[in-house]
Image (tube, rainbow, N blue to C red; front, top):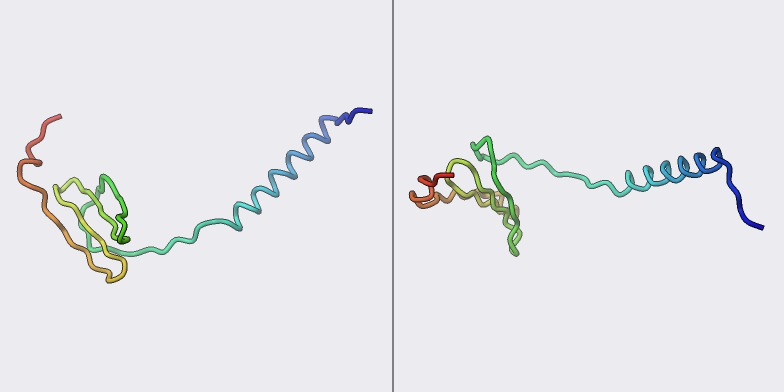
Length: 88
């Protein structure tokens, strides 16, 4: 004897699963901690974290910023002048 489900049963099971999934995902949501940094660049091109936990930002102003979360310090490192003369 096979199991035959009506369209209504399939829809009800699907909606039930989606509701469960929605509640489950809300329970696992990521809480964010906002940190205001003194970086004046309105456009950051890249972001990466190194093995020490420092976060590096590349900007359109031909500098790299390094943020150290443990101290809250931000260091701005200018790039060599030759990088400002590139052409696409």
